[in-house]
Image 1: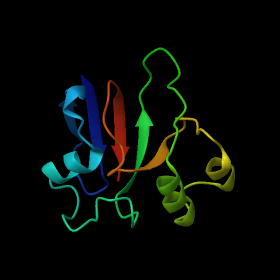
Image 2: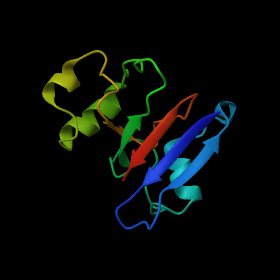
Image 3: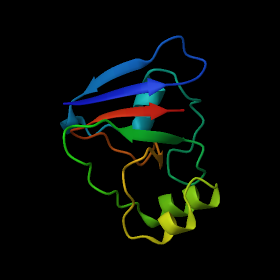
Image 4: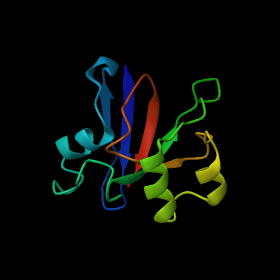
Length: 116
């Protein structure tokens, strides 16, 4: 089971959701379910409008580095959300919080905080 907490400046309190990992839910599907984003996002990692900052909460061990696919890396780099060093690296540390595309982020066994 995963726990996802959504934070946004205009929200009076965070929204926390439990997700069964076998459901293979993306962050974008959860954002849309709770009406936290516009429904007109492409959802295909073409535009970067679904970029969110994801922080993995501590579970006693360091989270594994993240392997971003080339399209996600390119969109995040071109929008200024990844440094050149992060863009060129084969994997990126999961800490501190890392910009990700919500349409590409599949929720697994983890506890995360998503800032929008």
